[in-house]
Each structure stands twice: as C-alpha cells, then as structure tokens.
Image 1 (cartoon, helix red, strand yellow):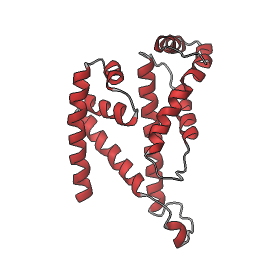
Image 2 (cartoon, one colour):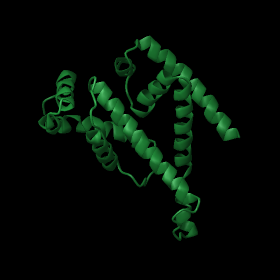
Image 3 (cartoon, rainbow, N blue to C red):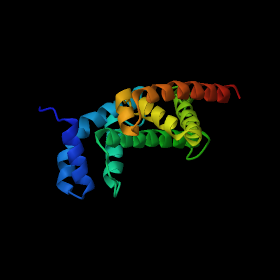
Length: 192
C-alpha cells in the first residue's frame, strides 16, 4: 500500500472544505488507520470488556467529523486534533451515562457476582479528568489544548506545535505546567 504524505491529506481536506464530496470519499480510507490508532490509544486505558469497541469509536468519531459543516481544515494535524476531541467527548459522555446508570437511572437487575465484574472507577476517573481539563482550559485555553492533543490525541510535541502554531519549547513548557496543575486538581478531588 502506498504511503500518503501529510501534504496529500491536507490537499484532500482543503478540497473537502471547499465542498468537493469526492475528496471526502478519497480521504476516508487514507485517514482510517490513523483514526484507528487514535481510538486504540483511547481504548487502551479503558477497562476490559468496555461497552464501546475501537472500531465503534472510530465510526462514531468519523460520523461526527463528516457531519461538521463549514470547517476550514488547517492541515492533517488539525483534522486529527478534532477527531481526538470527538473521541474524548464520546468516551466521557459514555462514562457519564454509566455513572447515571450506576445511580439508579434505567435500573436492571444484576446478580452480586455480575456486579463484582463491573469496574466503574475508570469512568469516574475519566469524568474527573475531563472536568479538571475543562477547568484548566477555562483558566488557560492553550494549556488545555496541549493536554487534550498530547494525552487524548496521542500527538507528538511537533504535531501539537504545528496545530497550535507555537514553538516546541512552548508546548513542552505548557505540557509540564498543565500536568502538575491537573495532578494537583485530581489529588484534591480524590482527597475531598
């Protein structure tokens, strides 16, 4: 299989942004593997037997991406940053729904042995991280984006710098400060 350059993908994204539906058809198979890699990155942190599988996460994110109207894609990295954000939202929404279910919404009878198999701590952690990240982004939007792209999107420092139009050094500084801030916030929440 031929390797497609970042430039080719960016050109197809531009054509798609300009309304060329055939560009979307050509683009889909080219970005599918990268979307699967992103989804796998997300799913790696989920508990075994998670209700959502990698391919379902890719499909849901893809549907949201093609549904996004009037987007002017900057480049390949911008596209995958948005895809990563959609995947994060999908997983956080699912975790919130499971927490709602845990609190009695839509109650289904479950035996004690079945209940022992459920691992809901991961959902609580994901929701807590999402809430802390939202607070960070409110305080400093760029640091929030750096975390989202690096942690949730699995992007390299160079890719994040490209998307945010800042230097690699700025990304590294924001990454270090954001990690410390998030750790403090999550520790505070766990203790309180």
